[in-house]
Amino acid sequence: MRIQEEPCLYRILMKTNIAPNIDRYVIGAPDVAAKAQPGQFVVLRLHELGERIPISISDWDPTAGTITLVVQAVGHTTQQMAALEVGDDILDVLGPLGQPAVIEPVGTVACVAGGVGTAIIYPEARQHHRVGNRIITLVGARTREHLFYQEELADVSQRLVVATDDGSYGYKGFVTDLLRQVIDAGTHLDQVIAVGPIPMMQAVSELTKRYHIKTVVSLNTIMVDGTGMCGACRVRIGGEVKFCCVDGPEFDAHLVDFAALMQRSHLHERSGLGGAVSLDEKGCGCQCHDQGIL
Image (cartoon, rainbow, N blue to C red; front, side, top):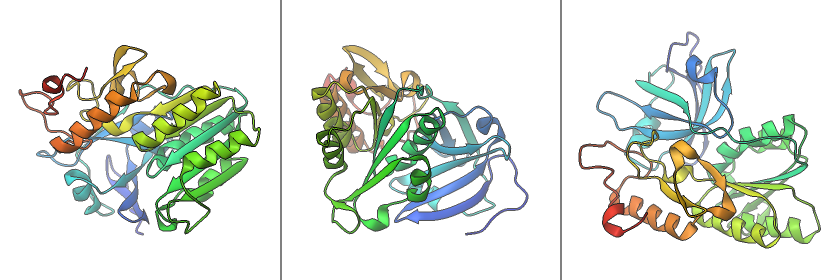
């Protein structure tokens, strides 16, 4: 890990590998850091010919003028970003974008995170802790080496429980199993927040709906353009069409049409969008109109 001593706008000041193919970047972005709130994101463009990609803000420091992003190298642009080092500049950092998470004193909140969703759940858990809520954090990952932010989450949680798919650390199974155990133990939950893969969030929603527990999910995984222009992140919320990047990315889980959401997600995968886009006059390119989705 190297630290750049003389920061400049949108320069990578620190880069740390925190899990396989996952890096944490501290970037100089004083304009974003001054206004960032939990639940929001930025749109990056690495260079003039680069595509725009939305990345959730994992942390920020208004005094230092920095934001922290956790990025998994899974696509063309994120792999290009993984090749950058401390001292390299990012051309554009637009944000903060999206509606901030609604955080207020409610009582006991379960924060459920899967995979890279851990980076998004952290600032929300921290803010819930600051307003006086009791935090139970449940984290799921494929293996022990894919876990990160454990110390940070432990500092803001009254209880932190971990599940891994292979049982290499904590409970062997899924994070939704942990939530079911918490509920079955008679723990009263006033709210649940779930961030992670769509199937996980759907499972959480179906579970909490049976117990009438208010639940919020972040649908950031299907965002593409990040500014509402392409329309690729349209979702049905309570029968109404919403845009994840403008109206969200967080919504009432019990109002989300997960069937349509999964279908749109599969279209993104087949179209190679994967959370990043370089648009032209042909539109979003996800074939959603041809497929009759929304």
